[in-house]
Amino acid sequence: MSGHSKWHNIQKTKGAADAKRSATFTKIAKEMIVAVKTGGSGDPANNSRLATVIAKARAANMPNDNIKRTIDRALGSGSTDSYESVTYEGYGPSGVAIIVDALTDNRQRTAPEVRHLLDKYGKGLGATGCVSWSFDQKGVIIIDREDLDEDTMMMDALDAGAEDMSAEEEVFEITTSPDDFGAVLEKLEAKGYTFVSAAVEMVPQNYVKLESEEDIKNMEKLVELLEDNDDVQNVWHNWEQD
Image 1 (cartoon, rainbow, N blue to C red):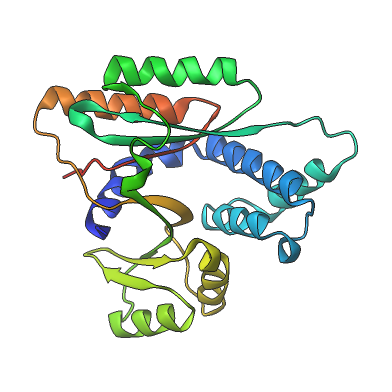
Image 2 (image 1 turned 30 degrees about the vertical axis):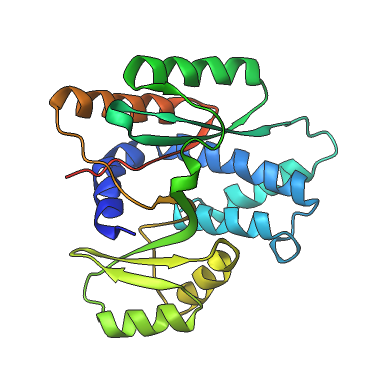
């Protein structure tokens, strides 16, 4: 995998993400509600999906009060929140592979909106499975290098159960299996590490570089508008950014 490309994606979007912290928390809360209802428990020890979402929330600096309030809301007898998980696959400019994860209470609203954006700025919506075969699901943990020792970081990551670690100029990128993500994060947190980001992601097996300014602008607009959609949780793609 390419940690270089992954970190460049984070650098490009970090400022925008900081400005949209509230929207980020709202999307994580929605994911948490679905995890509680699907798993039938508000206890992460008995609900692995919830444990994964809580780990993501903590890495995003979501306050503990928010996390508890969201879980209590999902467990409440009067809770009417009902979201369906839907995944769309398609193509951006020059055939960039795109996966859009959504949680929606109305497919008839979400699907046309996603299709419209892919048609306008990319090459359109594809059939289920058209691009997901070229991605691997991985836990991805990003840690700021600062003054951390690379060998120590590698040893701690592997001892925690990680699959691999790559060292970039500014960060360490640690990958895990989806099932081990929460446990690895917890063990690293116990050692005092803090995280730039941490989530289970769809990681591209290869990357596509866009050559024209028009393609780059269209791809940037496409990702921005998809991420701004209230129903969209994640946008995965294999665009390699400089």
